[in-house]
View 1 (cartoon, rainbow, N blue to C red):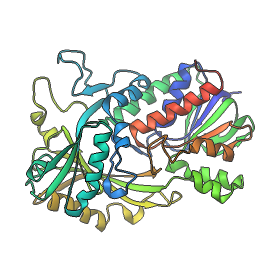
View 2: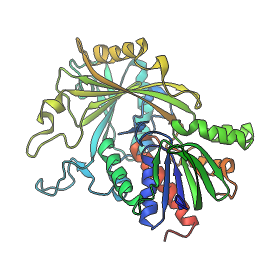
View 3: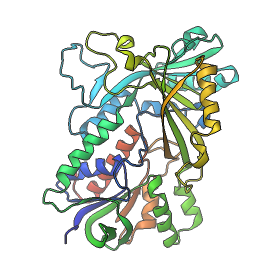
View 4: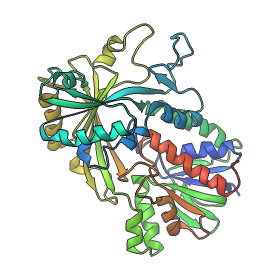
Amino acid sequence: MRFDSDVALLGTGLAPLIAASRFLSEGKSVLLLNPDRDFFLEDSELPLDPCLPALGPGSLRADRLEAHLPEQAFEVLSPLYPGSVEMWPARASDPADYHDSTAPHLRARSRLFAASGQDFARLEDFYVEAADAGLHPQLLEGMQAGKRFPGVAVASENVRGVMVPRICDVDVVPYRNGVLEFVRERVDPGGAERLLCGVSQVELMPGGVRFHAGGAAHTARISDGVLVFWTPRLTPWILAQAKRAELPSEVLAQMMPAGLRHWEEWSLVSRTAIDPAVVGVTRDVAVWAEIEGSPQRRGVPAVSAGADVEHRLTVLRGGRLLPAGSATSGGESWASAESFEALGELLQGFLKWERFSVRSMRPRSILDWGAPAGANEGRDPRQSMSRVLSWRDPFARVVSHCDGPIVDVVRSARDAAEALLARDGGAE
């Protein structure tokens, strides 16, 4: 039949594309079903792990930063990208070495966690934890801490900070666009149209899947299994499957994410030069120079690489944690009076700007699992969810951690694909 495949992948965003790339490399036929109009409409991948202290003890942890060291992140991202992933600062000592300015860049920046007054107590505990983990943190006091924070116009003597060197952030847009084009070219070699967007009424059945696409109903036989990538867009469908399977409430509670968190990514024009080598974190915001590619031209110091780099500031603000089944529209929680009040407190109270200009704001909704991928209190949601979706266990599996920091997304999708390949003898 037209859509019969070895593997079916249901989801939106980067995760199903990464899994598809891995399956295609093993000669598997893949059917991709996306309920959105395009793969990145949800826009739920972040360039970095924010690690915001105000979001609770589960956010600011040394093991989260360890998973985002540049070398470890490069080992996760590079093999699954169809081209070069560039590093900044460059790993090679010779600046004339090969460099692709259009490739996604993985940047190794220092992460400065700053606080004042009683807020610093949690950072002191984090400093000890980071030192024990071998992350080489530094304690910064007063002006030394204030002047290093991105965008600070007047450094305050009341600020204290913990600086952790060389934590990565990634160019999300070129990375995921490159993966999409690679998969699109290879998933339909015979014109079978196996990458479908805007699908609806997806229904699992023994050994296959039914769905609507292009105004018609279709059925596909699937030989190896189905992977469902859990993002906010798929939450209503997954909860409907749990209800249909009459899953006990205690089992459902065990495998649910901690909740749904709204995020606001503000792009601002800074009136002071921004050091692109540092990402600042304070309370519920992360702040950094807005960069795509390398922030320095050959032979030009990073802090003088041009006005665009020096004066564009990104502020990523974490909002309230809502129940996982909440609507993702955001409603009044995005760009509200509370949002502008918090933004003003950061820019005028902490950075000491007299006034500011907002270029844009991008809203996001991301599932919060309360722990990094693979460390969710010793349980794996993929194993639990197979009880909900399976007729031939484990024919259908749900994959968690498919949104948020891009390194975690790629790692989770890769691990899910590897597990299915290993079960079916497709991997060595």
